[in-house]
Length: 432
Image (tube, rainbow, N blue to C red; front, top):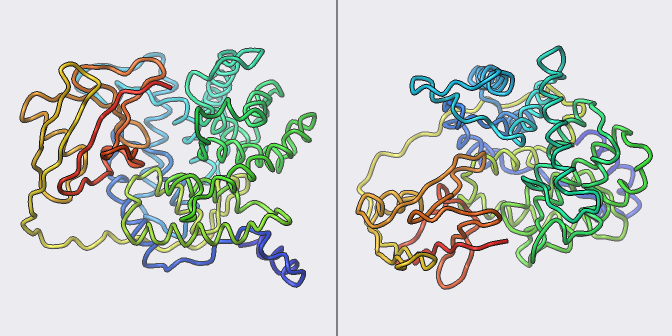
């Protein structure tokens, strides 16, 4: 654990161990199984499937993918720089990879991936990428407005991610840009609607921690210090009886923040151990299959966080991942899943039969093949995002919510959730 290990040694005799967030070593086979789920993603080299988070997660983990990992970074550089720096994007059918430009959040992750390889952005191309990310933050700052009554065009999560990416590359931002995120944390109704977004506040906390460790924005130092403590307190208060911070999928990012923490009197260590126990149970149950979420969890299991990208250790030994052994194909039973869409006229309701183990997206595809059901998606780093159902497109500040009857929101996306026989899945158009 490096400096944290020294701190634990010094404070252990004082009885303050419970005030430090430490994640004990996890069974290596369990970690390896998690890493093996990333290997198929490394082989998908089209622009729409490239995910800088995968590279970051591996570099901050105890695992490596060897030559495939190095080639993945090469393709990231080639296609991201081409996409962001080309005067215009090619749109012919023979080069479909260039049709969709990555988002600014993806650019931020790309910059983090470069730091994970111990690279600083530099030169003309690097400066242009930094300038683009800075312009994005300036645009978001203007959208929020001088009185903080507006909202970012994307989200405060991407806002914090952008600040973090520039910080680890030692690029300074104006106090007014940092101040918008500080205000959002200080007045947390700006970060969520009716529930705390643990992911968002954790990302903000990581950005503030980087600024604090790098001695950036000295005039904001007091506010930054208080904001980091506020974020920690909010995350601890969001811990569920099972041990998760918010939910199972927001817990890894929350732990990335808390692992940098020392909070006297807060019983931080106990809360982190409880979260670790809950995560291990979920890992054993196969909960983590989304590439982005796995890449946020792997660093935690190695005692690392995105803040470590300030000074990454690129010589640390890592175990070479081997592809998982495939099980012989077996005839799978057929299950029935009820699909309901009450938000359209006439309402849709139909029972769909698919092989057991199918994802919810497989159910959608089968329903579309049968006729009477249509849907559309957009590729994101978190997987396919549902943009339309039965021809009904999401509007501004709307989304298609997935629920398991009678009224349980799904935490996984359509590509990860595996319905059980007899379940009813409802697609509900909601606004926020």
